[in-house]
Each structure stands twice: as C-alpha cells, then as structure tokens.
Image (cartoon, rainbow, N blue to C red; front, side):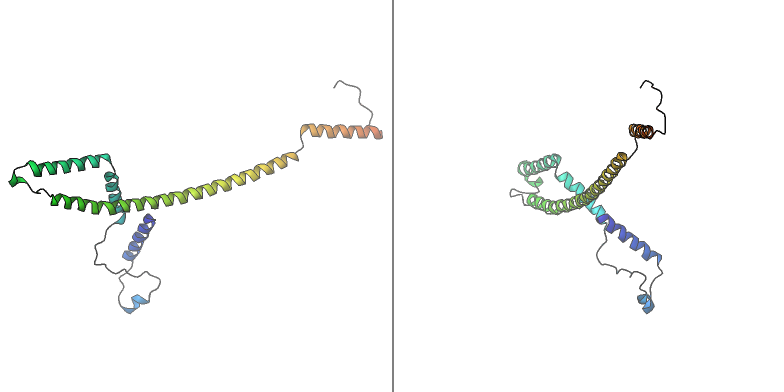
Length: 190
C-alpha cells in the first residue's frame, strides 16, 4: 500500500514539474491538470526510509545483543557513579540522568516498534491477499482441468476402438451370410 502511495506521489510530482507554471485566473480554470500542491511549513521526509529505519531499530531492540549492551551500559553507569571520585561523577545516587535517558529511550522505542508492527501488518495483509488470489486462480484452473478431463472421458466412450470395429464387421458379415449375398468364407484358423 505504502509503495503504491509513494509511486503515485512521485508520478504527481513529475507531472507537476513538466507542466508550465500556472498563473492568474486562467490557470485555475484548467480542469485537465492537477492543482499545484501548496507548500507545507513542515519538513518533508520519505516515509519509506523512515519506516525501514524504524524496522531496523525495532529488530535490534528485540535482540539479546541489545539487552546485553543495555545491561552492560547501566551497570557501568551505576558503578562509575558510585565508585568514581566525587569530582568525576556525573549522576549521583538517585541516578536522575540515567532515569531520564532510559525514559527517553523507551519513549522513542515504543512508537518505533509500533510503526514496524504496522508495516509488517500491511505486508502480511498484501501477502494474504496475493495468496488468496493465487489460491482462487489455482482453484479455477483445477476446476477447468477437471471439466476437460471429464469431457475427454466422455469423448473416449464414443471413440470407436479396434475391438468394437471388429465386432461390428463380424456382425455385418453374419448378416450378409444370412441373406445369402455372400458365400461363407472357407474355414480358416482363428
């Protein structure tokens, strides 16, 4: 979904760049051309790049390596601020700065993880839709082939086989012999 929206946005920008600049009342009367978008005071960003970055961060936050590094950092932080000389300590005992850093990390991690989950849900939805369509096509193909095989079987029932032709010819010979139109053939071994 996001890919299609991005492609549409890029195509619209390309069209706008190729159009002559619109000025005055005549420019507003043109209904066959898209309106030039207004400039936003907010900075523009690529949602795909941001989404990919958030997925990478969320993927890292869900690893044992992150837990180990986070634990190591907190332990070093606490030990440094307890054992180091007083003039080198930067966060005294209640560790307010450490609490602030962890809160900041958590406040950014949660939305990034949610964004990554939403993107994964979108991908799963698209994959599910593609699987459903593929399954429908396979089912239709299977039904078509089943009907074709049934038609072939019915057609094969009407095909003259060698044994059937032989029996029909023997019946015709017997019928002709009974009418006397033919002399019986000399006995030969069968």
